[in-house]
Image (cartoon, rainbow over all chains, first blue to last red; front, side):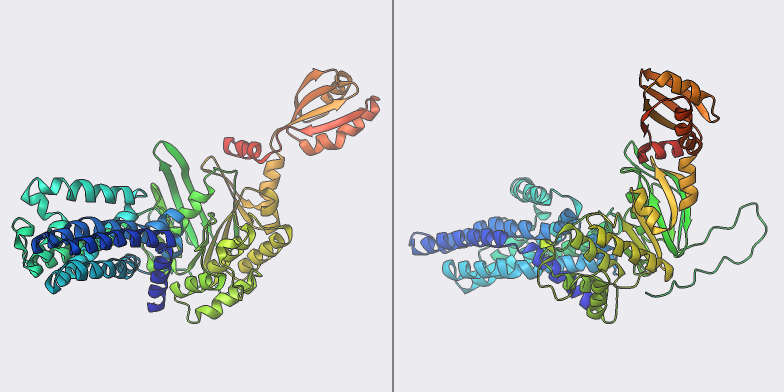
Length: 237
Length: 327
């Protein structure tokens, strides 16, 4: 059954990595890198200002944007193209399809996110900033990736709802109260960057690194269970 | 193709009740209904399907695809119960591996080659030698397993055959085919009908949906007629055909003298109504269409009337199905 599992992953990865999507997201990353190069040459920018740029561009814009574009499509494409039936009506567990979707999202997103973020971190920050940015980006890929993979199965307008979540919830509502902030993935990714780069003023009361990673783990597990449940109960076209 | 495995054993004998024993079969459909909001797609349908070919016949929008999808477990009935080989196809993982489905939609994994697509299907179904099974399945539907083109570039008929190949690669016990002859040219149609009949003869329970009477006739199968979401009739094809022929018919007759011919026809048995609609045209209602056909030429000749046209007005399938539902 392992061959079937890897077969599903191969199909999902191939379906989601269209040339247009990859080039568009690489272009967004390239814009960040170009801005980073100019920032690096500007002598008036402080070390904290550089980390703030990494957080604002990397963790607030780039990571959620790339993840929402790809993760909503891993299973979402199959639903939209009405080809999910070719996985669904087989003697495989629903959890295997959910896991294949999540793993596919990670396989596509980790290189697409970490390579531009690695280049950006190396240009703009020091080694702590680079490590912090890479770990925080990976945390973001796991957390956003699981949620948006589920969202792709839940609705055919997943990309729109994903962007609404990122812009409205994380960008606005999460700033209104500490509780709402705790429910925002960005709070935890920024906390990880702040802790590792030792730029604690980056965020008001940053969560502990271990707490941020635990919360990410919980998000991944809940999203995975919801995806499995949805696959069990949905009507398949 | 593998032989159909034995059906689940009957329940152990218990205390006598008034309830009849539950039906057994490859597929047991009990009082299923399906509604989408206010629209009733399938209403209180029950039937049992045994190994062999069974055709689901009905006009477009009659509820055939919805019924097939419920049998496959793709959607739950709003009411009632479906059992495939004794199990619920929506929740039982093992039974899903014994079903092959040829869905109606055309979409496949468009960048894959046919052999890759069918091999993936065989792999997911747990076939030991999936590539070999895929080659055999593609051979059966007369597709080249070495074709390097992606299936997205195939014609509708080729895609249809690839869909059939992925459905039979694991030798299912139940094969569900939603309008499988769509898009095939006449030669491919013949080959597909031959394949369906062969699978049925070998013990696979094959359910084929179609809205074309002639296709169903050539399958030589048991027929379930579905119309307006209800099971309108079921039985051997010839019984259904007779039922269709025995219904009231409306026939337009054009001749050189409609009134004279009408008077002559009224003397014949089986004419339940007649309307003269013009000097050369009349509409006949008859319950015995065969006798009417046999006698009209003689009646015209005896009265010196020339016949120009005898045209059935309600011979389309929609009318037939409406009659069957309204019986």
